Amino acid sequence: MQILSNVAMEKPYSTNEEDIRDEKVKVLRSVLSIKIEDVIIGQYFGDKYSTDPEHQLGYLDDKDVPKDSTTPTYAQVILSIHNEPWAGVPFILRASFLIF
Image (cartoon, rainbow, N blue to C red; front, side, top):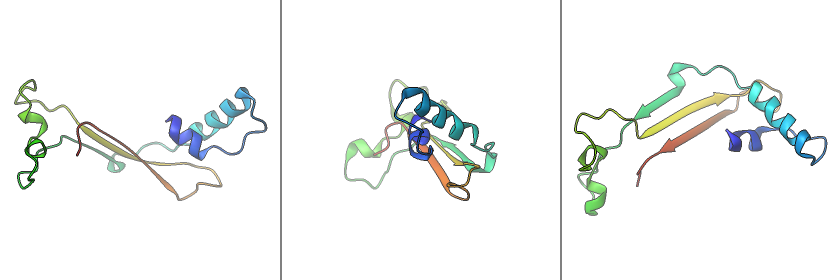
């Protein structure tokens, strides 16, 4: 959310930390509610066709991971900001664990 607010904030009145913070807060308050259809979560699996043995293994192939684990290893959300400069522009945030 720090990166989102840094990218999407409008130019602050000054470089004073309070003015910068106020612009970040303003843009974060402008984020519309997240719709479930704009969210993806998943768990990575290996690429059996890869020539790299490390890439052939998935999350559940790790010896320290329970075979019935449903722990997400990937998440994506599309956010919309309700303000003039960013109307209609999707912000796609992604996070992943061990994606090659």
